[in-house]
Each structure stands twice: as C-alpha cells, then as structure tokens.
Image 1 (cartoon, rainbow, N blue to C red):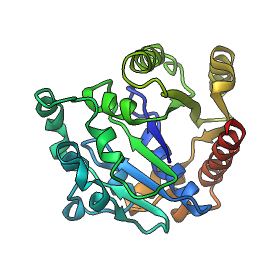
Image 2 (cartoon, rainbow, N blue to C red):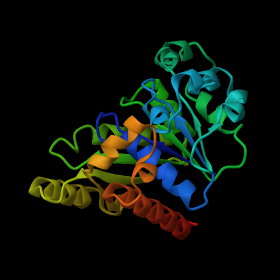
Image 3 (spheres, one colour):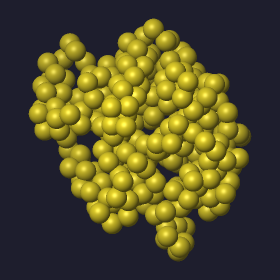
Length: 255
C-alpha cells in the first residue's frame, strides 16, 4: 500500500480535482484505491456523488476512533475506488486533537486499519494545519498540484520546508511523490514560462504530464461524478489517465 497526501496550502490549484480524478484513473486500471476526504468542505465527497446524509462515519470519526476506518471506507460508483467522506465536523478536529495523545499520528493509526489496498490518497485542506500534518505523518509521498500561473511558486518553499521537518522528526519515509502542473493553458505564453521555471527549479520532481485548463473538469463535480465518468475523452480526463500511467511507471522503476 502506498499512501499519498495531495497537498498545497494555496487554494484553487486543482488539488481536489487531482485527488478525485487520479484516484479514479488508478481504479480504472485495476488498482484498489481509497480516497480520504480530509477537508471540511467535503468537495472530494461531492465530486464522487456522496450526499451529505451519507457521510458518516467520516474522516472526523476515524481521527478519534481509528478502528472505524475500515467501515468508514464506502463504495463509490467507480469499481475499486472507496472513499472516507468528510463532514463539516472536521473543522473542529484541529482544536480537539490538541489534547489527544500523539495528535499528529491519528490518521496514520486509522489508515493502518484499512483492508489490503494499493493506493490511499488523502485530499488535504488548503492550509499547513494539524490536519495536513496528520496527512504528512501518515503518507509515503506528497503529491503537489501546482497551478501554472504567476503566483505558483509562492508558498511552495514553505510546504517543502514542512515536508523536510516532518521527515526529520516524525516520518523518515516521507518523500516528494512529485509536482503536477495544473490548469495549464497552452494558448497562454505565461503558462509555458511558469512551467519552464518550475521544471528548472525542481527538475525530475515535476511530472511530465500536465493537466490542461478544461471546462469539463470544472463541470463534472456539479454532476457528482469524476471527469473520467462525465467525459472520458475530454483533454482533462486523458491527462489524468496519462498521469496515472506515469505514476505507476515511476513507482515500478523505483521498486
């Protein structure tokens, strides 16, 4: 099992879109996948068609009772993909965890209760909060969606610094899974310049596959389905399938 935190403290970079569609793409090629919605907004749950009346037990409950993780992982419309949904109760978890024993290790304990799985994705909140720290302590790798716009690199150094601190103090196996460039507009010269700058700075940590700015990716959540279900032939869906193949190839080479 490989656990991947999808994280970026900057909002609006395609983090949840990446988590939902990459998890869907991997399930579509036969991988057993669990997606943990770890954001109180619950957008990943919405994007997989999980109504608000069907979101318990949720990621909030498993933080307090890790043994609930197996029963909290519910089936989705995608064969092979399960989700632990989120409710707005998660917004209060950070304050409540402060008084708990090992407050940054609660999610890790819950993930260890899951049945055999190939990939676990954690859709983190858009902040470097105690919840995000829980995800980093639980993860083997961090996948960073990075928008190809002017402010893309702003805040990235802080996230990388946090990853280094977690690796040094709490999770020595934590690595950078990779940076995926999102919302790329090939008609916009600035998008290409930002992509070139990011590749120059981060080298092979940046995936070759870029996710294009695509209206079908934006429309799909309003229908409660991943883009790969909404329109499998749209450029966004094809890009996430390519990213899944690239991730699996990279993992196979590393093994």
